[in-house]
Length: 176
Image (tube, rainbow, N blue to C red; front, side, top):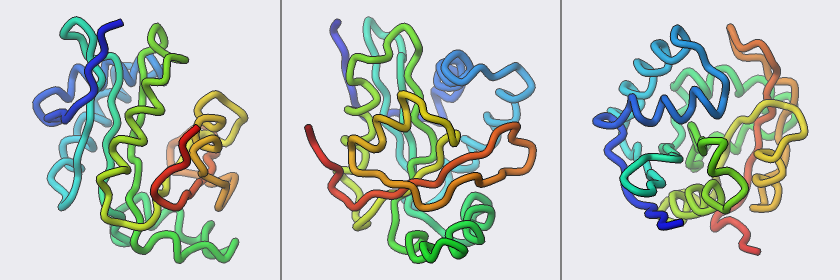
């Protein structure tokens, strides 16, 4: 596979990226429309950046994130859960992995690992945080292998059908 990982102008390629996310995450058209507006807003935040994984000119995976800001919606939702576990300091000086998705036909090839390690390698922050559905999954196993650990579990996001876990890792991430 001739895979290229590099900077992605996510605002210009939002529909391609969300098509990958829709397949990987099982999103319907209404959810994609809502997420489209969220992604476009996120990409205006200071320090927000994205990477894409492409093969034969087709986007097959992407990651984006930004320095955390306690006033952002995600932080306001997870902060009480982190505080209850004495981990709310993780919201300071952290790079948030906002989304990481790889098309199912390209999973288990190290693409997700390459995307997340590459984007965090250039982070100025000393740690990274993210949220993932709170079930044992290949994604959670990947995050653990990189040094992420659970900071809070059973985190409920409004309108999300399943609880999430908030995970954090010191940077740089572990390598195999």
